[in-house]
Each structure stands twice: as structure tokens, then as C-alpha cells.
Image (cartoon, rainbow, N blue to C red; front, side, top):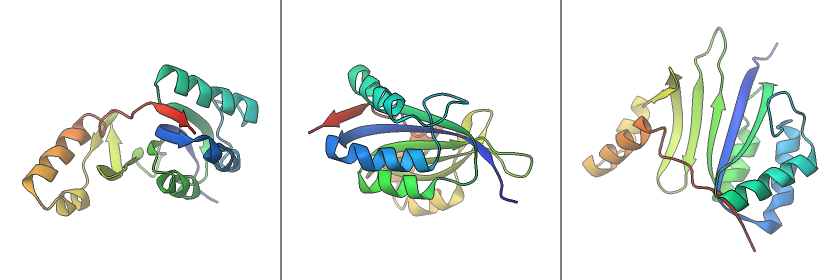
Length: 154
């Protein structure tokens, strides 16, 4: 039996309009909706993307009981050079985690305790300069820096 989690995905950055359909396909495959307990509906997701674009906020999608860490979705978002936070609720065996991708700035998995991310040793080891380490620690304390809003671009 696979492990299941509640998942919240927040996406920011510049999304080309030509890349909306591939994103919709991945969101549908992961059964991500626009609210807790809501199923994927293409019209609702398109409206959420337009709302995020119009308000300068990240787009947000969620699902109850995902059975994975959304690797295919995360790979697509990285290939589209989009920012994301994927928050997994955890369960009785695993602590809550947040997967973070800020292109060119910060990436990794963070354990979450009391809604505060905890830096992982592997990220400290990868930060081979004092400036990078200081930025990494500062960003981590503020939940890996705020996500930029989602923008739909031509």
C-alpha cells in the first residue's frame, strides 16, 4: 500500500501561454484542484491561472491523498523555469516536507516543523561560499523566500 499525503502546490514565475496545456495535463494527472476536496476541473484551473496572473500572486493547487511527491509535475515546472513550493503534509511515518525550486537561487527539500522549514545538511554542504550559505540560511528561515506571482506571457 502506498503512502498518501495532502499536497499544496504553489507556482510562480513567467508561464508562456503555449505551456499552459502541458501544465494542465500534469495538474490533471495528479488530480490537483483549486481547493481542498475539489477535483481537477480544467475551467477552474484556467481561472486560477488567470486570477494569479491578474493579482500578481502565485497560483495555488491542492489535493487530498496524493500518493507521491509529484516528480513529473516538478520536472515539468523546472523545465519551464517556474518557481514552486510543493508542500507534503506528512503522516504518522514521515514528517511534513516542502520541496522548493527557485531557478538559479535555491532548491531542495526541507523538513517542516511548526510551519517553519529546517535547512538540510546537504544544502549547507552545497553552499561552498559564505555568501551562498548566508543567502541559503536567510532564505530558508523565511520559507525559502516568497514566491513571485505567476505571470502569463506570450
